[in-house]
Image (cartoon, rainbow, N blue to C red; front, side, top):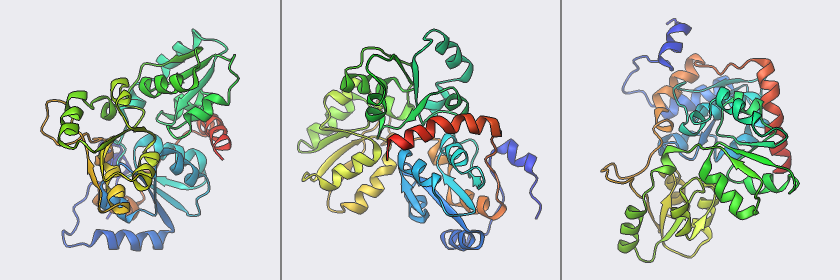
Length: 329
């Protein structure tokens, strides 16, 4: 069968009918071996995707893995900025993403032209950008960070040096409160998943589970962080639930991570708070959930869609990522 690349561009993924009786995990495993491919998956992916991945992690761990990966093909089960980062760090490898429409509300909140204009108002400031940004934004940044290393990255810059932090305002304000850095200007962006956690809903859950500890990602709003028992990156939240003696946790981040929490601590209870006034049961990243086993199978089989980035842009965007990785060692 011939796949037209232009049709893939239009729909964002390879969309073909497959045999419903096909054992997708087994076929994906076979294709990985045949093509010397590796699957990187974010913690926010669905559980069946996490279970077929070669490596699961948060943004920092995935960036570190992508830099030193031993494979001909990297398939990224995540969102577009993550696949871009893998390509930037492994420019000679073929990088695939099962759905080009798997974007990021946080990255979308920081457009290149708007941010470039913003930087002109703060000439001489060091620009720190979250990895949850496009390659274009990284190309005009001094250094990148993740929620795991943001404090370390900010503290690596002399106190007297002005800093711009983008794009997440909640993470930026949290880092500012920890570092005590007054000369830190914060871009007004946010992640739709973490913005939607509602104090009233969390308090209702706390009344039902009075012994539960509230653990929150720093992209949550300040009033959620103020009542949290622990604040940390996705990987830090997972580690905390393993080490802490509590048996019940209210998890204020994307619920995909709960799969790993349950695997590590099967006897503990994990609750994902719903957004306000909805019946969906939890806050999910709709972009992450665009990735499916079927799309992964077809992407590996036909090696489409492929992540292609202009070489000059890659070279510019690589510098702030490499600086981050050096500091994070």
